[in-house]
View 1 (spheres, one colour):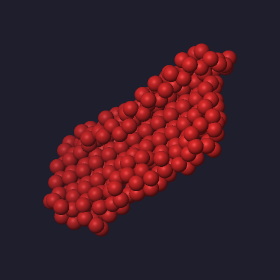
View 2 (tube, helix red, strand yellow):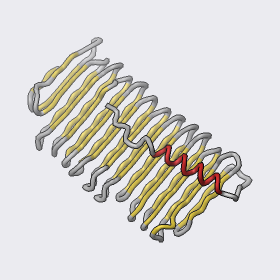
View 3 (spheres, one colour):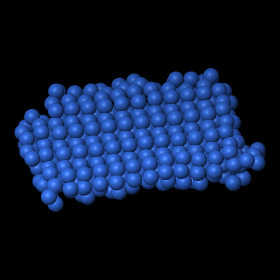
View 4 (cartoon, helix red, strand yellow):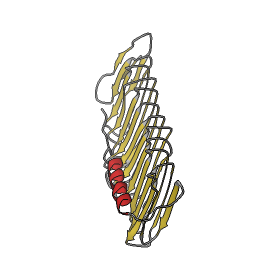
Length: 293
């Protein structure tokens, strides 16, 4: 269940930078470009495609900084007291940071075709992509603060998202050709996801003060933790095609689901547990509705 939170962000950055490169008349001789602005728009570009753009003209004073090298492109936008910083290094690398209303946003892309997008209207966002062909998106659309942190390495795809206005903490980490997604919705909470190994998929969702943690490794294709109330869930899976699902909907519940070697486990606080060991592996559930494995 990939949510695909902010897949348009990188495209927006690429389009914006392409437009600014086209209209800029100042070309530098080095392969490094940077800018810093508090109340203006500054565009520095290089004939080889390296570009740094800072936009801080709305509601100053702001702080917008950007640096780029080795054919990377960095865009930093700050408004109404925002603080944004972006850095891109490597052919095809793109970093975009946007902040407003005193928020902080930091985006760093440091490898070939890496892409990092950090957008915040409150609180703090940080997106880091490294290695090569990695994508990290961190977005805080709410006004209640909180943190959204995404880190992707070596072809990983990590999304951290806070769409509502009551804060929370969303952390997503992906390494290798894997996917990690963390989302905190209405009422806040904590969502943490981590994936490693080709084909691994970890997704965590928290609502109403819940705590959700999902960890996928070695190709576990569906590891999902959903805390829909002030409760605590943990899902952990390893092995190709492994599936671990943990869901809680009642205040105070604790649910865990763990699988190895591609097994299947489903746990919740509203339904009986399901454990299906496979390939000599283990499937384990602990929940208020019973245990298995």
